[in-house]
View 1: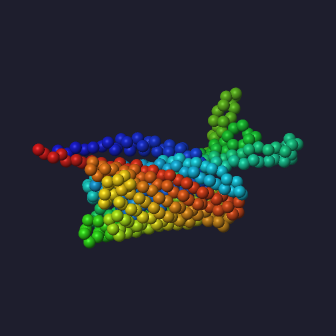
View 2: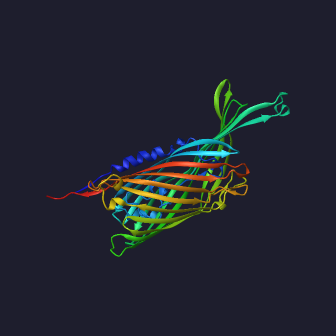
View 3: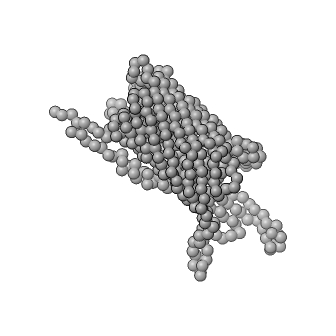
Length: 426
């Protein structure tokens, strides 16, 4: 007799509904998220983020593997993964430093094996870009400009939140023991809000940009088994996302007194289109022994082709994100101690950035490390928790720009279960 367990599915559906509001958790992120369509988001799990890579060339035995659609065909049990990150950003400009904080829900992903280690169905919600900044400054109007005969000083501020997200469903196919491919179409939607406050005007002006479009991802994964045939000695993966577009509408609202009553007035409505760039990633993972693996991966985004009908000029450029990381697996030998039951991750990454402002590339260098707390092998647990810490340096203080020092803590929760359990007959 076969029993079907669906306990992960309602949890995932509930989490997906909450993820629509996830970008509202943002307090304030990087200063540079105000450019273009927001700052690109890394959707890798805490395990891969701790290694400085995307995870396109490495099978995650506990996680769901969002980075490469080809990995979904390799799963033998249902997997669900979600992640959170908390960041503290020290932004320095002209010798003045302010601290911003960022709390975000990174992604939600579920993989269901239609046929064990053959066909895998994926469903995911994840961000593509994120906008979260807060600019404040003091403005001065001369006596002639203020029409009052006096110098007028007032505060202005611009606060933004939102970005671009995708709701995706896809399929992975393990063609043979070495090769697998995958494809994932998605509905991508943009929702951003900019709140402009002027100290001399009582009402704020809220500017919204909303829209949706479609995107596609393709993936391939190839593995070379070792001489014993039970473990890999080398694995390679690659993904490709063609250019896509989002049809958008931008409008503004403000609260005005109409007939003595406060009413929200909508104005300055216009339609436009945002063109998102081609993206590709590729990587190689090497397994010199059962306790160690090393991965190097690269991601390319052609942001030089980005366009936004609502902006005349764009500071975007092509972006490369390069990473090198390793993992150590002492638990494969013994689990007699707590430290011996963990997985250890470390890595370094260099992101050239997708912005060039006044001739300066807004690049980022990351140093990272993390651990994986794995389920008990005696209880046949397929769940784990990954925790990672990253330190990054972004931007430059030249030409009145902003230099950022970033501390980030990420956590991923991986849940796994066998959906089809065959009971033993007595």
